[in-house]
Length: 323
Length: 250
Image (cartoon, rainbow over all chains, first blue to last red; front, side, top):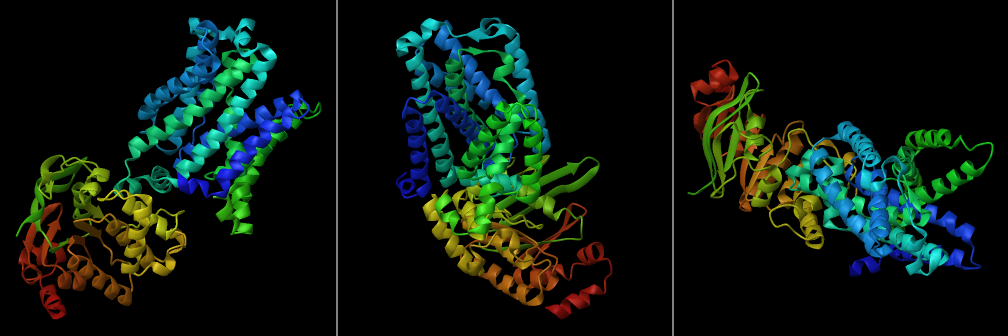
């Protein structure tokens, strides 16, 4: 833990969170806040996806399922059950993590493309289940009753509080990635990524490690989902489990540099800003997926290590600062 | 002399192929036991059975006094039974040092990252890879990768080391270095079980040799007797006059 304090990246993460929190506060800039919260969520999703893809070498196409399920559990607890937001969001995180542990023990026996296919199966199955689940409003979903914001000092305050909570979850996601990377557990994951059978022979309990990281990678996205859908005031199966977001998460990770903490954040930030620009520009709004696909091809072809990998090649010493 | 490894009536079948059939032998503590046999005799399969990559269809394996039959490789290495691979499997994207740290971290002593680093540096010194510690494992030559395999296994602080053809593909100088290394490992108190095709080396190194043919054990004896064993000579080498050639090598 103490060695973490000596790492530049640790302080950079805290600085990033502080800047995110401070920027929109200055002049009560709500538009900027809404932009930054999307960037923060993209960073949460991408850096947790990185734990699977970048650290362990298992491509998860259904990562968004954690976010959506977290949103559902959180919203259900906060509105139907009347829980305060923070316990509701944390419970959503724990519940989704436990579910992921169960899924993980099942599908993580598969390797490579078969695992990737199974994650698509999980996404489709969960969405179909939720769309038919009566307590969660089937395909119409759920709404946040206006009174739910009252304990937080009304909607205006609630939105700010939620924003700061999402920023905290973003910082925690990055610190989690950093901590795991520096740990023995992380070393075991990287060994699995490089050669799972060799890792097992060297003593890594791959079955348990994979299940744990799959479950861990579900926790903070689920918490973020609970916060975001509470802030948005509604949830339904098509927005909770948006396939495209799952795929775009992979684009963000590859763009920034999979396997690196900074890469996940950088890729998420850049791509999210680009996407927002394209979506709001009248001539290009349906064009952003074409650009996402093209970008992915370019990155894989020209810079498989992403922007961070490219930086390491250009300035080898930068690795010491960024890692 | 106590036995560190005892294999009793172990069999393994892949579909219609009896890869290992009813094989029994034991390995004394502190010895170098050689394992030879023609291609496809079941040598690597036997290694895979011993360290738990495959589960035996029948038979028992005990190591250091405990039953390890059917236990997975990651548990077996924790007990002190480490191995190398015939086809080298470095963790390509990681540095040489990191590869060895993995071995130390998850081996018998279950070391912390901090201690594992020290162990890894010490082991790299022993196998002569200190200068390459920071280079990516994928850039090593074949000889380097074989040394890395040995280093990773040694970092686990094993009581018994399984070496699967660590000499194959090496040039004569590298072979001599590797033979010295294997001797040094044994002298440090680690028992060794090794598969080898380089006859001169295995005859010189081994205290005893087990010979497999078509999945069955056809001999278990000191090298001097194995080369005289007509079963071995005929079944394994095919023509009896090779005996004289082997004698010439001794």
